[in-house]
Amino acid sequence: MKDPPNGIHAFEPADAARVCESFFHSVHEVAKSKYDRAQLDAWVPTMPDASKWLTNLAGFHAYLAMNDAGEAVAWIAMTPAGYIDMLFCLPEAVGIPRAEMSKDLHFENPAR
Image 1 (cartoon, rainbow, N blue to C red):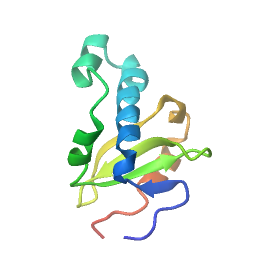
Image 2: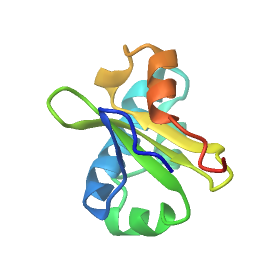
Image 3: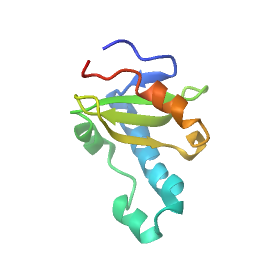
Image 4: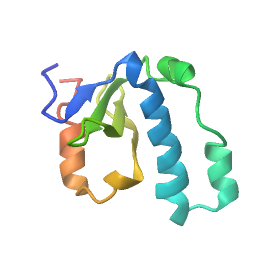
């Protein structure tokens, strides 16, 4: 697989806590207009355990999108066949044009 573009880096174990934070905040803040509180709490009741997410992401090609300050604001997990399984972002990344974020996060189909 080729190197990711600037602003994107491959998931590393040290990123697990940030992935958990962005997952939790994406569900509870970004998705709150589409789901009621009970649904959000059923989906992600508390901040996920970072060590468990290391196991969850082991079978995926995962990447993080970084802002100008070098902080992860979004992440994607793709199957070995190149299908997007998960894509979540922090509320501050919602204004990024979807086409740009998708292009940057899905820079290469790992199955090619």
